[in-house]
Length: 298
Image (tube, rainbow, N blue to C red; front, side, top):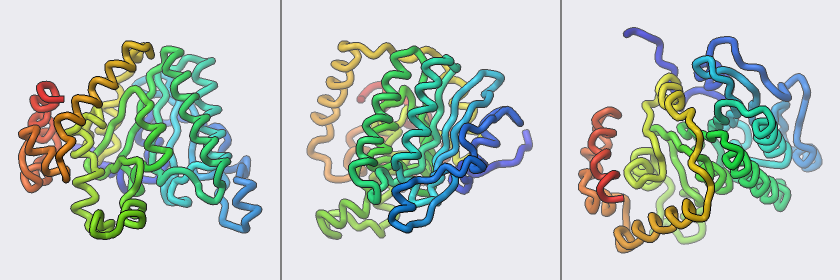
């Protein structure tokens, strides 16, 4: 089948939404014409953007109504501040009321907007609570990570609260980013300019191997769309037993990998191959190679 490939990693928020949702189905909430900007950036005489770095709205995915948000990583690193978080939280609260088939977020963020300090931290906390409330309302929440910035800091915490995380090879996920680690611990501990090291540690392939990403997509918006379409099912109920299950998984991972210094050490423990064989494998072969290791050893 011949079709045009739209690279997820090269697309901005609006292009992702355009080619992810059914054609012509998206209706934006608080579009740029509303001129909704961060008052905190204005007060600091810093550049603003009329959507504050995130596009939110309602559309269709294979004729199913979904609520969707996509961050603009090119604006201030996709950072989450007061206005952006208010748009995201508002979308989630409306989803709790209207009961769409799913809520889907395309994350591309370095984390909290440091210019906004405590306001940004509170905003992320409100976002996490809204995600969990949405899941408790029986609405599946799907996170997609494949943009140029990655998903770090508070954004990574919010993303991991979703029911499902879809990543591509180009995606990166981590609480502390490479530059932060290097700044605090030194270049000897982590060289943020070593691109191979960054992707081995934070990249989509590693996160899929370890189970931090539930699904692995090609760097193509259509691939993310196909995978997300298969996840429009009622989420796992948020119970104490479910939380204990997560804790057991984390304890088992620590026991298996606690002595591993690098991602390559983890791959050896799991028997999925060395860095060269993993990085050169196409997406389908990579998923097949990981399936046995993930089911048997994680």
